[in-house]
Image (cartoon, rainbow, N blue to C red; front, side, top):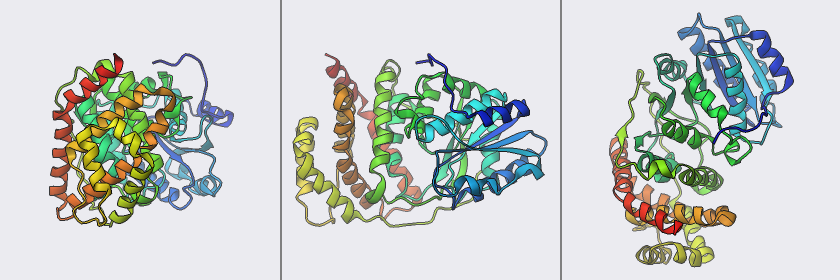
Amino acid sequence: MTATRFSTALRPHVRTKIEMLGTADIVVGIPSYHSADSIVHVIKTVIQGIEHYYPESKALIMISDGGSTDDTRDVARTVDPKSYNIESIVTIYRGLPGKGSGLRAVFEVAAFLKAKAICVFDSDLLSITPEWIRNLLEPVFAGHDYVAPFYNRYKFDATITNTIAYNLTRTLYGKRIRQPIGGDFGLSPAMVKHYLDQDVWETDVAKFGIDIWMTTSAIVGGFKICQAPLGAKIHNHKDPSADLGPMFRQVVGTQFQLMALYEDYWMKVRGSVDVPTRGEPIDQEPPPFEIDRNDLMAYFKMGMANFGGVWKNIMAEEDYQIIERLARKSKINGFSMPTETWIRTVFRYAAAFNDTPRQRFKLLDTMIPLYYGRVASLVGELEALDQAQAERFIDGQAAQFESMKDELIALWKKKET
């Protein structure tokens, strides 16, 4: 799916600036939105990383903002990297509102400047260190096209990754990329050109499905991929019972849509392989936190009341009966959704999503309470485990997804008949 018409995410003043610059060795992009409290820390840390590890390189830091109504851009402009011979651009991107459009602007600048290596960072990072810059850029200079982040995350963190995104990426495409929606990446010029050539920038991907799209496109495009250790990822903590519903919709909706686009690829994949990790480990441990399982169970039970009929139509009968019993539970103790039930539910929703194009996102919304139920169950299963044991549990869950792939393929073929 290649771009068919010319458009740009760059404003005229940005075009003028990059024409004056001519070239750059390194471009660091920071897409931002309402990040006034954190963006100075991110910019200063990037400057430190470039100054320490790449002092001879011609570098540009680009803040690609989504029209923040707080002081994000003004605050960003208070940091002047010119004293370190680093250029900067602070701008509002053009295009649909969302991180994808922000990254498109960064990619356009990097392509124009013929940058040799590109990396991007979330603007709300609290744990970024100068070593992150080195660990994302160095593999690019060594010949890798796509450098995915490998974080140390607390066992209850990254619930969308641990319930769906990692499992599906590994099962569908055969690559064990642990953080496929991590948000911080290293990229080669060839990878950036490939992204810019895709005709997605006026679609939902340009809003918030960008991270999983980037990872999937890199795999399917046959690019050279590795992971980089980045220590702990600490940003504004999100309780999955509070505000992860919209993110679920964006990430999982994009991942399900990509299944239709790339079905010829993933239908042939069996098993999975490790993706190499390159770079020096960063010794950061994530802080622990609690998740309110009772709130998650309440959302799940509300879902049964509102969407039980939809669930019954989509789910296997045995799985619906399990879900029905869980919804009758009055206490969180013993609340456990079997992994096999969850896997079959994900597979069936993926097929149903792609079988109902006009109502697909309404259908996906009915899956969110089931996701809350799975997270409530997962937290209970991980509670007594240490970090290493929890990681082995997640790895085992992903292996179960893989082992049941034939069920997904059968469902997919059935929907096409």
